[in-house]
Image (cartoon, rainbow, N blue to C red; front, side, top):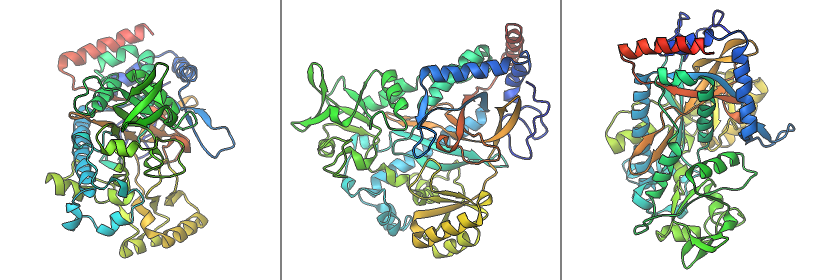
Length: 497
């Protein structure tokens, strides 16, 4: 397959310049693909899909007639990120997570940011994700946000923006690790020649960040991953991460509170648990503290947590920073706590709870993207330019009934990347979800999950809405000697295809 007929169509392309020439860092990749014999790339794509099937790399979609369990769509044409871009992304994400952690801590204590008039009190009081049970809570090491997946997009000018913060139970990192394993088999020599930064150590870094939270005096903490069970959409990821970290995968029924401590049932009796990486939403982790009808959590867990006898990651209550209305204030939050300008800007956002902004939104529903503030996965969303008048009218009624529950943003011309479609390459819109760990320090995995809107013209990249993924290659700056080595390696790779 060649790129002779590939068109950027006026969008910013992650691999090609507007002129159709490959970006400098992507040249070895393009040369390698174009050197393959006819049909070979298709063979490699099919082999990758077969590997996903054999390894059971799946996700679950609810409410469809086609079955719930699906293989995660994967495109073997990777996305390449330039070193300077990644440096800015890394700095921007560390800044954002540090500020949001300070924000969550402040919100559940003195609320200085509210008293100083930076964030409106009514914004927090009306937030579904604010947990009164967490007021006065002091998490270990003062860290609330341990694992984050932040969604980034690039507009038609190439400018990066933060689209969304995911600070409760962010998913998808297992696909990053599996995508990389499959791509290393597909283009083995390119990784060395292009100096692609590795991601394999993420499970070890995650485990270290979790162990850092253990109660004082515990030399060898027992860490477990708490899952809702096999019917959860991300169960594959739960099992995979537990296996990679060498920790137990448990459900609520496997844990019990004894003497104020969390104990795990084992074949040898009860064993104390020191750290819980929970993949269950706040509402379900403890029926004594949150939803009384929950059968997924552990009765009394919050009491043990408050007493400092167990650590939870992420901390309950972090969802307040997931609220898409709070998202609109993140630049002010960064300025307030860190006294810094935002490195990666937000997408311009209209708050429907503000009367003047509400008028603008209702008058421009055909041009804007409208989102429900507490939903994710592509649900509760109206993409104005791709919607019908009936859909716009329905959303207008919902917005008028509950303005606080919605925000709106301009429809961005998201960047695209070449994607295999039948027997050719076509541009498809992409976003990027890097993963950030906050333990003894803040670590940003080099790369992340590039999600692809596989449907032509679609802007929705979520797997539940027909999206797929790509491997994400963050490359290092090459010296002249390395550039020469890359060319020789690409030639050798071609000879050995």
